[in-house]
Each structure stands twice: as C-alpha cells, then as structure tokens.
Length: 152
Image (tube, rainbow, N blue to C red; front, side, top):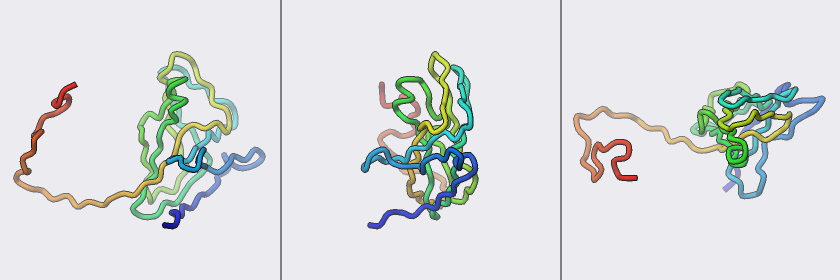
C-alpha cells in the first residue's frame, strides 16, 4: 500500500528567516505528525486560559479524509496543556492555516517558544453515511440507558 499523498503549503509564519520544520513523525511508527508553534515571540498561556496557536501550514487533504488535532501526552501530563476541542477536526475542503486551540489546565503559566511541538496531526479516513429516518430502532441489550448506565 502506498502512502497517502497530502499537499502541504508553508505560510509566512513558518517561513524564513527562521523556518520551521515540516510536520513530521517523532518515530517511524508514530500515528501522529508533530505540529509546532509558529509564533514569532514567546506566548504565555495562563492557568485556565486558552490560545489559538498558528502552525504556519495549510494543507489539502484527499476527499473522504480528515485531519485530527490531538494533544501531546507529555505536555498534558507535565504542564496540563491540552487541545481544548480534542480531537479538533480539519475537513478535506478546508484550505486555511492549521491552528491549534490550546488550554492550560495546569497550575502554572506555560510559555510556548517558536518551533515547540504543541500537538499531533493524525490523518484518518472518513466514512460517508446516509441518514435514514425510521419509526423504531432494533432492540439491544443496553437499550436507551444513558451516561453511567453500565456501571462504574
């Protein structure tokens, strides 16, 4: 199986004089591509605050695919920094700059530096579905039980 081709456009925030690396996997088997902060100056996110952080790239995904923006586990564990709308979705027809909505759930301010890895981009297939309105649904063991219905 050949790799999926995704076109990536470098935008001014990621360009010279201090160009950022292309999004890349940290290891050969990593599911996500690391996205970096394309900030010109350090950006401090106070506890409880959020920030929309540019990455300096736009992309063109193939039809029936999406980009999922996910947190980096180390930032979440050590600093309480996470992606607020995780996973964030990039639709195949979006052509604007990829930005990451970060929130600081930690106890201390966190300062992002230019080029710092802030999130992961996972590219995944999307299954198109046709919704059909019906009068009833088939029975199941769970039924209509809601949150916490199956126990702790």
